[in-house]
Length: 77
Image (cartoon, rainbow, N blue to C red):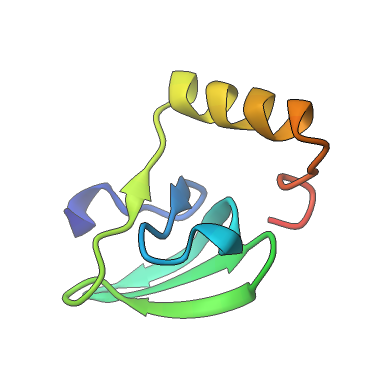
C-alpha cells in the first residue's frame, strides 16, 4: 500500500474520520507525514494503519459532500 503514498496525495485515516482530509507531506518507508485538515501534521506508521488514498473522482465526491455539510477541509491540508 505504501507504494501509492506519494507526497501530494490526498488521504483519509479510516480509524480517525474526524481528522478530515489529509495531504501527504513526506513518505519514508512506513513513516508517512500527513497534514490533516482537523488534526494538523501527523506521523502515520503505515505498517499499523492503512491510509485510504483518494483518486481524483473520490476526492471530488468527498469535497462535494463536505461542502454540502458546510465544512471546509482542503484549505488546511
